[in-house]
Length: 333
Image (tube, rainbow, N blue to C red; front, side, top):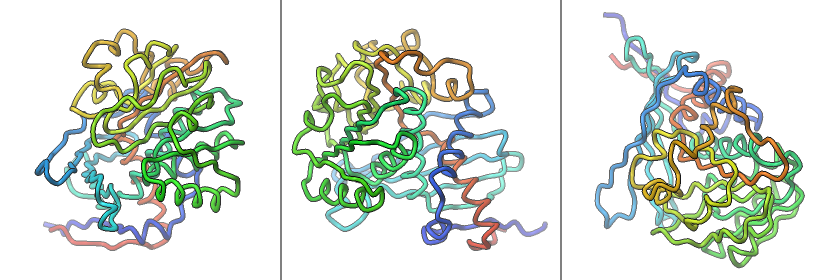
């Protein structure tokens, strides 16, 4: 039997690639397009809670993208209290496989991949569902994915006003400082949710609640706005879906599976179902369903995170790493 080798890319390798905003957006959009064209297989994520006392869990995401000839499994730890130990709250490994033989192709540190692809999904949802002239962003949350939300939204919309809020003052201040430094524009730090999101053109809810709590009030949402909630535990009111013209998800199969998600209660109570769901984002990207059709639409995009986005971005990273001679070849057998 011939030796089987796979590529290992650590976090330092991926950082050295210095992916551009457009490279990230293009890769994730390619994955969405393949999904919309029916060229993928995706299974709802599953969760492992080792012990409730640890205040965290693992997500396991699985998928296949035919045009890339890759299958993938990502395991990501989600531990809210890790900041107390100086650790990121989310860290991940992405495993890529040859779908024809099952043999390993690559193992990648997927912590940054998770952050970048999440921000790309938020931004691509906004590209299709927000007003093209949207300029005011209200962003709740300061976790690692939040930076990429704002950075990639700004790439598409060239925002004129960015407001941020998070539970801990030190986290929101540090978040705003980083954004100001890297985007070269002022960022407003707010003391409460209402000041942050009221009247904004785009509202992103990426909070880190330990339990569901309706902190984002429906009455604060301006007509014509786009709302993007993706917190693990719901922070929105049940009435939020009542004011929406279009509701879009990243994948309906996982939107109504598992115990977590911003609109979990809306699905469980029947407020959100296959009948009143407008589309999956991939269907819009592929041109099979329309995105925003008028300036006065009020829209919602709920994403839980796609294995397809991890695989698509991982494939783009792997290709660039091979061109740069980065990574290690490890023997599997």
